[in-house]
Image (tube, rainbow, N blue to C red; front, side):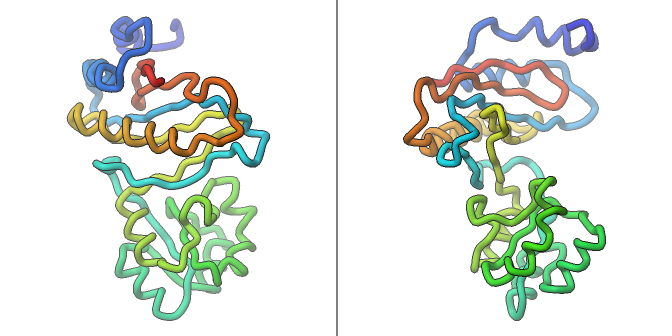
Length: 226
């Protein structure tokens, strides 16, 4: 607490002592003091999974009902007619061997990389570059697909990729502080239900251990999830 500024400490006093409903958590968050920029609102889930077990690893992609308040720079590894289709769908760049070399040479000005299955033989060379940044195309996250134009369009519009960390946490953006409360709450509830459906069959005990809603410069508000 002592390391936080006056604004944060004032807002922390407004945080309920016990978890509250999604709607109440959102209202609490929006009642915090405003900043000069539009903060990103995030949902953080601490899940009862064992990340060391491959069958309990959670990774995927999902589009929220109201988006997340921003677009993403997407590139597409593809060939032939797919190159123009990807660019028309919003890709900042698209191509085959030439794009692989461009990335190998150090160009990383993009948020998401998508590839057709046929291109993965070339894209696999980029594992050491894209892997640590979480940008390596993967079938599990929906970024390896034959329908390149559709994927580019969805991810450009803000489709989320998510994966659990080594502590069993999943953290995703669900909007901006400028969103109205109903949209933030609906996005949060949608993702919680999505993760509920993704519960590994081998996961034991409490699945949703702790859930919080927070923003870039605010305290976290605990959310009650059964």
